[in-house]
Image 1 (cartoon, rainbow, N blue to C red):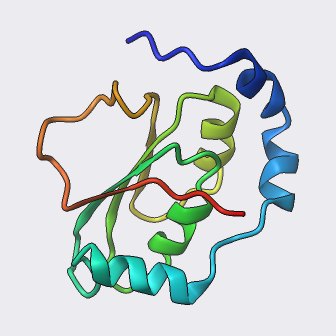
Image 2: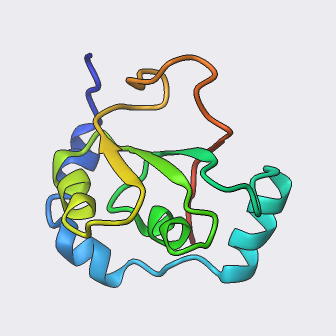
Length: 118
C-alpha cells in the first residue's frame, strides 16, 4: 500500500501528542445529528469507518457511546495513529491507510465519516 502523505502533513503532525492535547473536540449536538443522518444512532455494534482519524478525537466520542460501535480509524500518519492507539479506546482499531487506499473490504461498514473541525 503506497499511502504517502504530503511532506507538510508528515512534518506538521510530528508532535502528535501536542496536537491531541490542544485540538478541540467536537460538539455533542453535531455528533448526535451526524449519527442520526447516517442512520447509526441507536444501532448496536454498527461498524463505522473514520477516515483521516488522526489521534482519534472523533473516534473517542463514538467509543464512549452506548451503541458499542466497531470503529475502524484509518490514518496515514504513523505518529498520529500511535497517539490514538495508546488511548486504548473501546471498539476502536487504528489502521494505516488513506481515503482511496483503505485496507477494508468493499461495503464492509454501516457508515463512513471524515471528521474535520474548525
